[in-house]
Image (tube, rainbow, N blue to C red; front, side):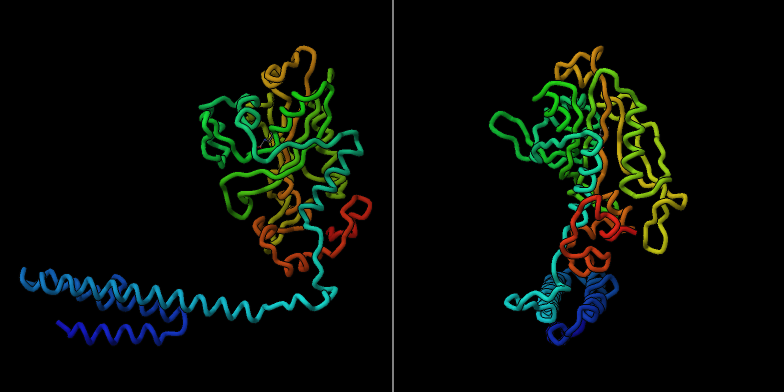
Length: 361
Ligand code: PHE
């Protein structure tokens, strides 16, 4: 067996001398990787007598652990150096006056919220609000999603710890609880939209754990699915500034609407961009339907007298479509360079009247 002491000194000095992360990884593989030098030595233990095993087993284990610790420490060290280099090169002197090109701007999502509000208030909706930390009753039960209902699983809910009475608050998984709050607190007819933040434990190019929805609720004595369809189509035409937006209503299921549908918008994913009004791809932008009579009963409305529709639309999704942004996560990366790349100018006034100026393609 090799002189373990010498081997250790040799490897440790190589680790300490290594000054890049790639090289360090190579070193790790060469020494303690599956076929690394130390791992091969450990294999030889199998051929040894019990006495030799007793002597070399712990020595080799100790050696392996010290090498791994050394590599981990050097890795942290190199990462810290790298971070320091970056911080130094991206340093901003905040005492300098702001050059105009570095000015912040209205976030595209804020801009979208504002435009959505403007479109709907113009056709007679008012704006309602609800808390982001919500009670189970409003987020689920009153919406006809009782405990144990399988739809609860689909929501990937973030729960708070139980309180003394055993109740768990949660981060609202959709803006639909605002429907219930609106109907409980006032008299019909209702015609509201409720934009805001929503949360689900999910993250990829088209999902982020925090996202935005706008809820719409219309309840009156003679509301039917035609009203729902018109509202959505009219909204899409105005928002995307296109006469001919391809829209598809897919039959779906939500416990709080019956019948229910999901709405997709026709688009194309091309060369890292997303284009609306062309192509054969679809992006889902909302769920909708006629309010389930059970929900009306839950808020003491008579379903024989009142009916209506509701929808919940993903604001981040429609922002992606509007500006051709293929990855949702970029919205929340807080990178000024990204804002500039997409042409979100400082002090844009986010209203319909200036929409064409606001980076609209
Ligand atoms: N709340 C549903 C969701 O987040 C969307 C929806 C709202 C569906 C209103 C129908 C009616 O998926």
